[in-house]
Amino acid sequence: MEASTRHGRPPLVLELTPEEATALSCRVRAPTSTQRDAARARIILACAEGGSAKQIAARLGVPVRRVERWRGRFLRQRLQGLGDLARRGHAQKFNAVTRCEIIALACEPIGQKNTGTDRRGKPKYIPITRTREQIRQEAVARGIVSAIGKTSVQRILAQGDVRPHLVRGWLHSPDPQFREKVTEICDLYLHPPPGSTVLCIDEMTGVQALEHRFPDHWGPGRPRGCARREWEYTRHGTQTVIAAFDVRTGQVVATCGKTRKAKDLRRFMRLVAGAYPEGPVHVIWDNLNIHHDGPTRRWSRFNRRHGGRFVFHFTPKHASWVNQIELFFSIVHRQCLRHGDFHAVAELRAALLGFIAAWNRDRAHPFRWSFTGYPLQAEEPLARSA
Image 1 (cartoon, rainbow, N blue to C red):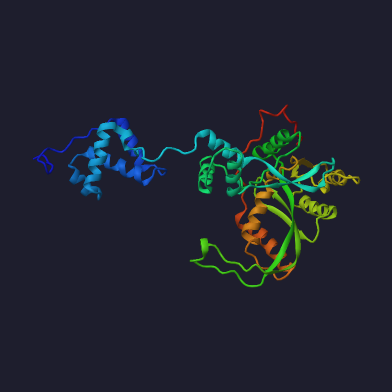
Image 2: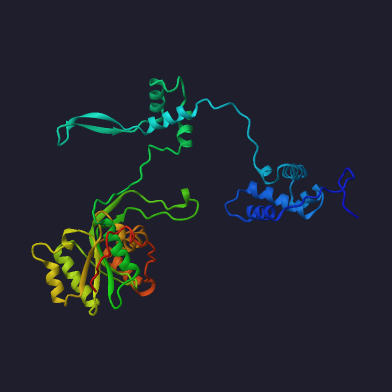
């Protein structure tokens, strides 16, 4: 016997088209759907399986009125009926032009005149950022609005995704051959010449041996789940790490010392030559002065002593992100230095070299480099000697 409602009528039949069934199923399964949208879609799918509103509500564990409401809206408007209705409220107090003028006011560069002058003899200006109260006062003073509150200013800026008090770092490379150099280096990463070695070399300077006065406090229940650290520390000195990262294997050759001078780098490069005694070696490093030949032509003489096996490639200016050794230095900082507590420079040196030895023994792996450079924008194919 067919189930009936409390009024004695047979339950309302709800039929879905294949497209509607697919769309509702996607709303239920999609990780980006809100709980509200997924619950409404689940109700409609349950109605399509049959049964009265009371039976469907019992299966889903929701009120009967909720089932009746969304089933009725779906029957009237189909999928569009599952959205929220327009909420009642007062009309917007500030029109689009006014809101745009307030946003422009918040982004307007202003400055305070200084007593000094720049190299061209013009007065210097100290940049100033307006607060919400100052934006409100300036909007009223300029006649943009007759009156406005700080909360309204904040709401208008938030709606326009404007946060003038925040700054994100950005570094532009002025190198005129930026695209060509990046393409050449990326090609070495993705297609290293057969029988050759590609090494990324750089220095990590000023690594501090810091001894904290009190140990860090770890454990659950800390604010934001992080450790608490006493601000006072003793600085016992610094070390400089010179390292070479093998792009093909992930192995690292590294040394620690007090300074970063040309003689330190020459000593390290002799170590690299001993670690890779055969085949061409492509070296990728930045434009530091000791990376260039200089008056003594240090690297030309070094290359002649080793049979001309070394090919030097320079990253563009202000583009250290192209060098993969920076990824390894980030790992060293996060996993070895950030939570370290060193009572002497010798402890810091031992920790650094021990971490690198453990990396080479257990964890060495190449980085997955997916950026291909700018092969289409390069002016001409770059010839690369083996």
